[in-house]
Length: 199
Image (spheres, rainbow, N blue to C red):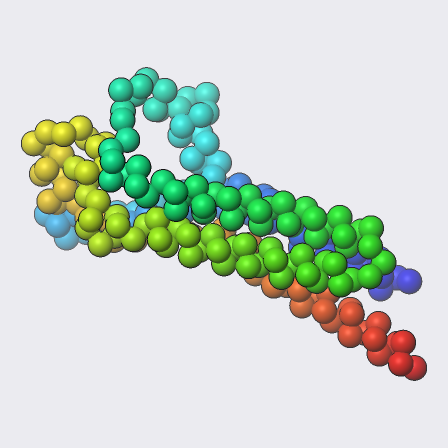
């Protein structure tokens, strides 16, 4: 009886820990190179950082209402939205895994949900890689992003600064690891129960 309680507690913790991981752990790594100084500059950004940047109380982009998305950037948005959908599905499946671990007598639903959640995180990696590809291969430069406007300054910046890395960071790996751990934890207890039934 005690081992069943231990299983439920650990399973719920593994399933629900993905929520704070997704929000507060660095989700995206951005690294650029500056050719003049031959140096790399980079940042790890969490979803909370992104929220504060655009929607927080001291958001720096409130006043930039004239900032328009270029056609090149707009063409990559479906992949970014797809990444967000995969992330949202993974978080919902994490909640579902916690619910099944608590409510279901059988551990099979939790095992299936953990597999689906892990596949959602994998989908997040693939979709974000597709989103980042044109920024990394030089198809979309700073000038084409429109962040500096369409002027001589943006052309110079595009020649000097190049995006080297744009990828899902530690949050994605930790979420995937949590779902794998949940799968292994649940699978191990299923094997124990099968062994007990055969006695």
